Image (cartoon, rainbow, N blue to C red; front, side):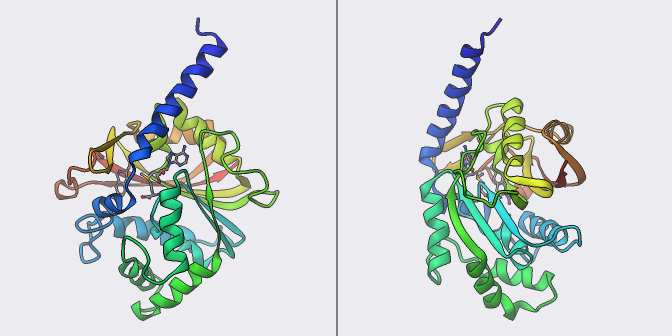
Length: 278
Ligand SMILES: C[S@@+](CC[C@H](N)C(=O)[O-])C[C@H]1O[C@@H](n2cnc3c(N)ncnc32)[C@H](O)[C@@H]1O
Ligand SMILES: O=[N+]([O-])c1ccc2c(c1)CN[C@@H](CO)C2
């Protein structure tokens, strides 16, 4: 029979091991692996990034998602996940565990062109989805820079993932999180716990937009930096959502065609979830 102290110790050891894996994370390499063609090919209907941007565009333009505060959990060095949400919310908080990623985000936010990836094609694609024409991309960039109020440290394994007082007291109106929870959790139990922790950042009735990997056991966070991932299937994601106090509104799934499997991970599918906090 495992005592509480032993269980706590093994939890702490697991988190420390995962944190150690992330010390080698290389934002520029990660962006190169996942956010350039073929995975980010805006001329291909079956490319992964356009699929993700379409899911986010649809979700953020549905009438049940209204303004206020949007928090992106585990932003990493990427901005694609908030390009639709930035039009709907007045305040956007980006977050990540690593200073290297927070620095990457601040670089783009503070200065034209100071980032490891050119986000212009992403801005243009989302403008097209919004029927604004691609030339509005610089307006969207200005809007994003205007609504991001903070780039904060976060740890989803903490019951309070953000520093006290980081958000207004009712909590955020909406959370978005992509490829974070399963990529930082040692097992399904930790994934579910983390889902509950971030739920504490959200007001009751608020929405969660969650993008994640299905069937993935590892990914490369940089050259030679192999990071373990808890392999999930759709049923486990739905069960974890239910267990951590969310009502599932819908789940959409993308199955990777062979040429999207480029050797930087062993992901087989991607889920997009829209859920509401009970
Ligand atoms: C696979 S990346 C996802 C990045 C981005 N959201 C995307 O969609 O590509 C996982 C992110 O989780 C962050 N992370 C690592 N440990 C974390 C923790 N304990 N709490 C929150 N985020 C963490 C990493 O720094 C990394 O940026
Ligand atoms: O295809 N993609 O757009 C894409 C983007 C990011 C990531 C993946 C796939 C799969 N691995 C995760 C880390 O667990 C990160």
